[in-house]
Image 1: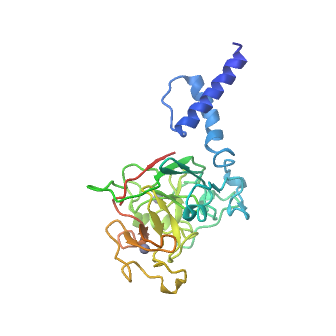
Image 2: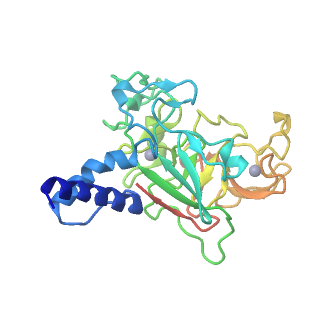
Image 3: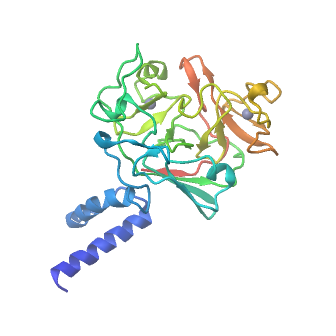
Length: 305
Ligand SMILES: [Zn+2]
Ligand SMILES: [Zn+2]
C-alpha cells in the first residue's frame, strides 16, 4: 500500500476505535496512532453526528431557537419516553438496550463569569462572590449510560463519591454534582464561587451544579434532571401530581418526607402512578440547597468523559 492509503486507513481505524470506546483515554503506546486519535478526538466527541460544533468561549452565543449554545446539537430520539423527550435539551439523547444514553458538551445555556471576559456569554459574578481561581468552562465529551428501568438497589447502596465525573444530567445538559466539594475544600466555601445560576467549573473545565440550577429551577417543583441511577430530580418542592403550582409543597407535606438520600416516592405530573425521585433540600452544613447525600437509591449506570 502507498503511504497515503495507509494513513487514510489508519485514520478510519482510529475513528472506528473511538466510536466503539466513547472517547475513553487510550493507553496505546504507538505515538502515530495516538496523534491520529488526538486529532480525531475533538471531531468525534463534538461533531455534528454527536454533540455539534465544539464551543469556543470567545465566540459562544445563545441560539434563540434551541435555547442552547449556537452549533451544539440538541436532540432527543423518538424512542425516549415523553418525560425525557419533552424536557431535555442541549445534549443528544438516545436509547441503547435497557439504557438511556446522553452525550453532552456540557456548556451552560446561560451567561456565566466562567466563560471568560472575552466571551459574549460572560457576565460578572454577583456582589460578594469570589472567582474559583482561573477555572473556565470548556467543552466536554460526557457520555452517560443510565438504566431505563430504575429500581431500588437491595442491600448496601452505592456511594455517590466514588470518582464519578458527574452523578447526573440536568434537563439543559449539564453535570450534576452531589453535596461534596473537591477534596481539601468544603461546599460551604465553594458556594461563594458560584455564578448567578449556581454553577461553576472544575479545573478541567467541567461546569456543574451542586445546588439548584437556577436556570432550570429556583425554589420550585420543576423537573431538574435525571441521576445516574435513572431516578428523576426535582427542585425544592413536590408538584404532588397537580399542574397548578398553588399546592406545591416541600416533601413531607402531603407526601412522605425525604429519606437520607434526599428522595421519596410520590406521584408527580410526569409520573402520575408514583415514582421514587430526588429533591433539592436545604443543607445547613453546605449553607445551600443540595442534592443527594452519600448514596444512590438505585444502581448507578456509567459515565465517561
Ligand atoms: Zn464544584
Ligand atoms: Zn417529590
